[in-house]
Length: 263
Image (cartoon, rainbow, N blue to C red; front, side, top):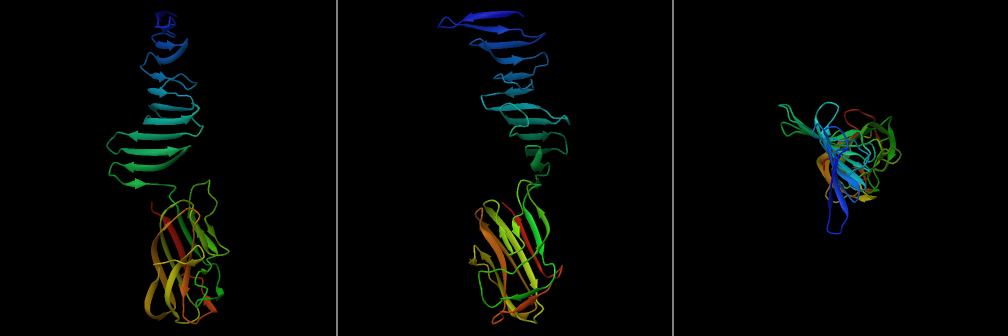
């Protein structure tokens, strides 16, 4: 290995070395800081990670500019210089049908395609309904108590989350702060009695969520956007004046509770 040595103003030796064939490294305080290999790949800051198109390695986190296994350009952020340690990444495809993808760990979380359309595969969505008939529902009182949807049909979420819906009390718990769309409905077996519905929030009637129809019907529905803080709970309350012992049927088309996180 060849090297060129320099003396700094304090009389300390700094150097440029050739640690491998057709490569060059820059050292300060007797430690390699920058290396360029024979293909032009660069590593800044040392560390254990291999050379990439560009690899920057501060004390705790590293940044890599490289190609992934599909030969797509990638910016890789990793804790302690280890690719699978708290890793995040940005990936790009510069071809005609290109995209930009953002990932965390080993999962893609966000993608923008060449038309500007956005896909978020772990964006929260819930579909719940009834399994069997609900009897004894208080539709004329208990304004902050929701009806119970006792079956989760589908729930799209990050695998690290437990279910956000409680099938024993009909309450959805917001996993993160954000704006949510709620769509719920119920089909009653107690006659044409429903004239109103609303959503509950943290055990009370949620302000500005009333949905009123002109006269009594067996079917009642509601659609709302509500901004929630993480941990807030929401349920659906169909209302029928004076009716405290209502039957609500299981029905795939008319009894359901849906939630989507939109941002």
